[in-house]
Every structure is written in C-alpha cells, then in structure tokens.
Length: 288
Image 1 (tube, rainbow, N blue to C red):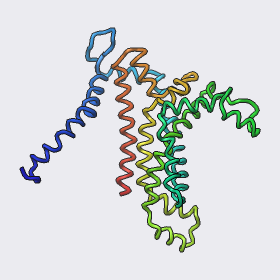
Image 2 (tube, helix red, strand yellow):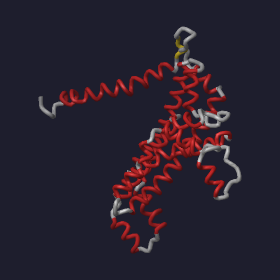
Image 3 (tube, rainbow, N blue to C red):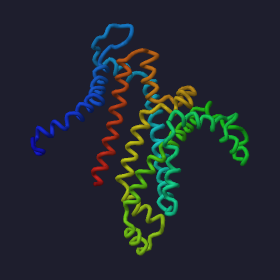
Image 4 (cartoon, rainbow, N blue to C red):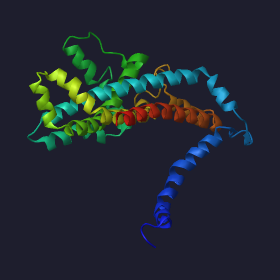
C-alpha cells in the first residue's frame, strides 16, 4: 500500500478518530440527548422536550449564577492578562539567569486550583491571615477585612486566587509573542523617536495580538466552567455571593438529583462558551 493511497491515510487516522469519538463526540451527544429527557431517580425515563430548558430559563437562581459567572470570568481574565503581560515584559528584559527566573515565575501554575483556594483562604482569613494583618500594620485599615462575610469581597478574593494560578500560563503566550518580534523593529521605533509607552502600544501589542487572543480564549473558557477555587474558598457563599454556573449544575445533579436539568444547564454552558470562543477564533484568524 503506497503512502499516497487514501485508504492508507484513513487507516492511520482511524485510531485518533476513535479516541475523538470516545472522549469528545460521544459525551457531547449524550449531554444533548439527556437534556431533552426527564431523567431523575424518582420517575421513569421519558422524553420531555424543552421542559428542562423552560424550567432553567424561568429559574431566577440560574440567572443569578450566570451573572456571577460572567463577573468571575471577566475579572479573572482581565487580571490574568494584566499580570501575565507585566510578568512577560519583565522576563523578556532579563538576559542573565533568564532560565532560573522563568522557572520561578512558573511555580504557581503547578499549584492545583483547589489548593490555591485553600492557600488564599488562609491568606485572607481575618483572624490569622497575613493580608489583613499587613494592611493594619501599614495603617491602611483599622480592622480586619471581612472578606468571607461580604459577597463582593468574597468574589474578589476568589478572583485573585484563580488569577494567581493562571498568570504564568498567560505569561507563556505573551512571552512567546514578544520574543518572536525582531529587534530590528524596536530599533526602528527608537530611531523614529518612540518612547517606551509608544513602543509598547504601537509595536509590541499589535504584534503579539494573535498570541494574546489565544491566551485570553483559553483562560476565559476554563474560568467560565471552573468551580475549584470557589469550592475550596467559599463553597458558593456567602449568601450565594460566589455561586457560579458550575455550582448550579452540581446542585441539579446532587441536590435535586435531576440529570435532565443538569444536562440542559451543561448544554447552555457549552453553547455560551462556544459563542465567545467563536468570537475569539474569528478575531485570531482575521488578524492572520
């Protein structure tokens, strides 16, 4: 059989295709099918059409969870991009011992999100945590911050804990983009009289746009569906102040034991991620 033979190509592609079907396509199809079923532990399995979706769209808890998810995702994505950009710019200027500093900068990425939540839960603890203690010692506050009893502060704390893990990931994308820029481009900018800020906004940012968008896409997709940090820090509280869409799906599964509505909520999450992922991908290919 010749290498150019189409049958040989199909033969080589079959194992990968089987893996894709087993790990990606089959679960997605199962999710969509289940979302149209009345699937609980108390009733016989039956087709219910759009009733699961109607229930979810009429549920105020769902809309509250969706709003919290958007706030959480936007907050983590913005802070991760800003932190990743700052770290990448700093690392790109280091010439001696660059490998050591880059390795150190990646350490937080190795920490699981759940563990990050536990770490920052201790840091933000108003009684024994170092955060409030340091702020009181330098005179910025007079009493410990009630981070875990205030819904807005709790959300901000979770955003910081999630961002801390994701910054190195964003840094890798941005740093790769920065290092792909020729020094001749920067030399030309200096000859034209551009200062550091102008060089950054008119040279660096436009030339790393594709890499930055890729990092933003992956970060926002993973953040939108995650509950790891929030689970270990606040478990969705206080007063559902950090109750994101992932918690809503978990509650449908374990508290209501309704697999149909849980699957419908999962489909909605999947479609929402697909929509803004499509926007990112469109801009990435448009840039190319």
